[in-house]
Image (cartoon, rainbow, N blue to C red; front, side, top):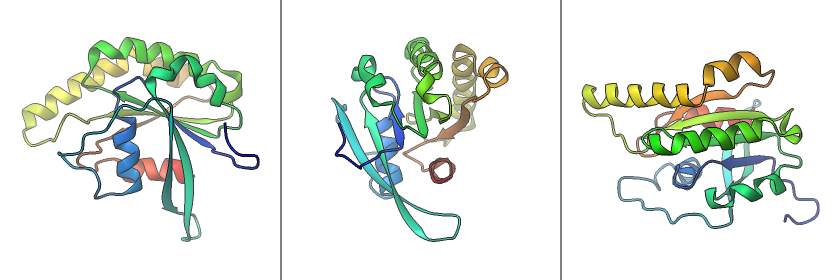
Length: 184
């Protein structure tokens, strides 16, 4: 999979169409994603080099491997040596959330990830918040998604519970928090 000596410590996973590619493109280049951006579904894997400032204020790069949602049955082949997982869920797609929950629970039960930090990233990709009515609709969908994912239960019962992040690649909201998660 990787070349010998090359380690990709961060995975980006989620169901197909959850917005992984758009999110990583936004992390890679802040100006590359706008309302006209139209990603191609990932068949296989993609590598993204993401720049960030370390604790000493020095610029560093980290590689993130995105694995397409269509490859969920093969995700287990990429788990060795993983330190962080970004698990992306599109909260505007309520029909997909139960399947996303099953995939997430399968990952959280994986022994090779017991020491990995996991971020459950709920994405606001279809919402550019202009009207408070849309904001209320998003909050309702977000709450329903977290309920379906049983996030509160996961947070109390797991020793290594996922960290909840919210982000929108279109508006850039939450991207800095994700960058902080990656760099820690």
